[in-house]
Image (cartoon, rainbow, N blue to C red; front, side, top):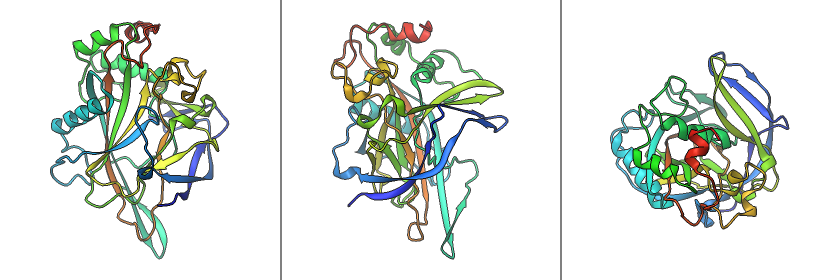
Length: 328
């Protein structure tokens, strides 16, 4: 299948975007001018989670009843499978599923014109390229999982917490953690509208990152990065993804070169054979009258913690636990 060309929204030159979840007001700008990008068929490329930031795995699971509009019926057995999958894919010593979200994009076509159908209680696909975490918010995410739940915890499912074993591993010098998203279709049909696309982490530069801050009641509760346009970005997607396939992509990896240098170096420059930090990702609208059944999906975010001394975690790094829990 040849690459296809689609439109995408990107961040503008402004480096800061603030969104208030209570007042639904924002300060900053997103460039609404759509750019044209080529989507490369990832099924014809050897994309790897450690190097490129994402990969697809054949992983049939039983999701139970109709999951087309809600993730409420997906329970502990599915989260355990996500944890096992991340452990298998990364070699992590321990994995914790800490957040879930379901999304639905339902385009209908009336006389050739698209009309979006809103699904109550379900998030819409995000069609701006972004990351789920930043250098600072990734550390904060680990920190909040080490204490009891609070009202302003942004990504948290119930009262999940780090185990004592995970805390002990994070205390060790050179400890490594990674935040991994397990993304899957929940519909019987193949995904043809709003598939998820990812930017190869090896093509991301530090200046591509534009910080987005989420606020609640005036208090900052989370940060992500928006992607500035870079013509060198390589954009991939897996066409016609099935319910039996799980897309894994990194939200953050503390052992990545970009992460370890706090944005002074790109992952492609590589330190000691380090893995990548993260790709950008976002849904792409390739729907049309012949692809009008839409898309429903579930995403489960997991924290993976690695044994100290793994090849990709330099022994020269200070304790991850100290940097996070002592705010160093």
